Structure formats: C-alpha cells, structure tokens
Image 1 (tube, one colour):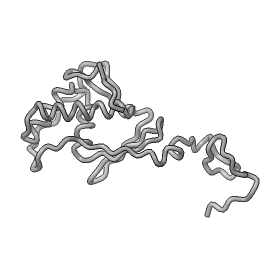
Image 2: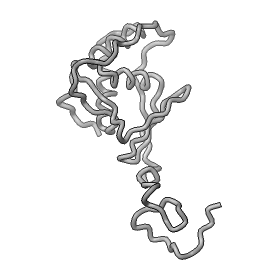
Image 3: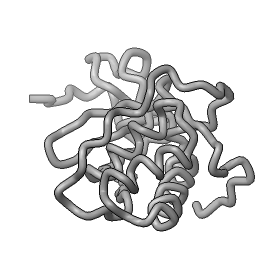
Image 4: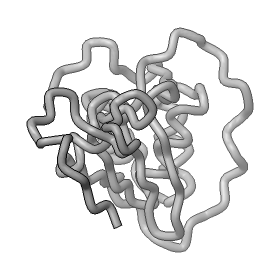
Amino acid sequence: MGTEHQELGPSSTFRLHDTHVVLEAFPDETVAANLGTGRYYSIDLMGAETLELLTSGHPLHDVAAHLAERYGADVRVVEDAVTEFAARLLDEELIGVASRAEPDDPLPPIARASVPFSPPCMSVYSDMEDLLLLDPIHDVDETGWPARTGDVTDRSAPHDRG
C-alpha cells in the first residue's frame, strides 16, 4: 500500500464503494468487507466516525475541522490523521474520490466528546479472501455448497457437510 494519492487534498470529497463494500456497525467497532478483493477490516470507533463523515460529501478539511472541534484537538494534527486514514481507505478500495462538490446534508451538530482525539485505526485481514471471493450463487458444487473455480477435490465422493 502506501500509494501517494495526487488527488488527495483538503478539498477532496469521497464516496463509499457501495457496489462491493459492505459495512456492519457493532458497539465497539465497524466491520467492513471488500467483496472485490476478499479482504475484511476492523475499524475502531474513531475510524467509523471518520469514515462516515468522509463519505458524507464534505471536503476532507471540513471533516478534520469538525473532528478537531468535537475532540478539542489541534486541527493540523487531526487533518494529518484524517488524510492518512483516507489514503488507507483509498488504497484498500473501500472509498473513492467523489466528483460532486456539494454534500447532501450539513455536518452533524458538534457534541463535545468526553475522550481525546486519537488517529482512526483500521486492521486489515486477508485470511478469508478465498471464501469472500466465492460467488455463492454461481460457484457451487453439485450439492449446492460454494466451490472454488478450479477446485481439485474429488466431487464424485459424497460430502459430509453436517
């Protein structure tokens, strides 16, 4: 990863790659899966809040200023952290740079946080790439279970899927 993003700047806006990215929020994290790459991600609460704001159509600088005020942090520190996080999200193909200039809705009202700002964190997992890349509707064996294309297992023997 670590790709330099020429298009990434204070006025950059983003969109979620919702055709191949799914998100599920839990009390202490958000889990994302990129069905195009087979990777999945654990995104901490700060990362989930940042991701939501970044994909709301607001420029990166406005998102950073909003978070800096909410967490009582230096806007330059927050903007550096948000920019780095956005670059990681772009590298992982979870978001893309948006072309529209106007957000749909204003940023939410600022509710002062009781915790200090910390850089958004995302862990990447690739241990289930093969399973996530399976097409469960089309890539199935004769019993209806997902099967990898080019799988070398003997499909003529009965399978115990119990």
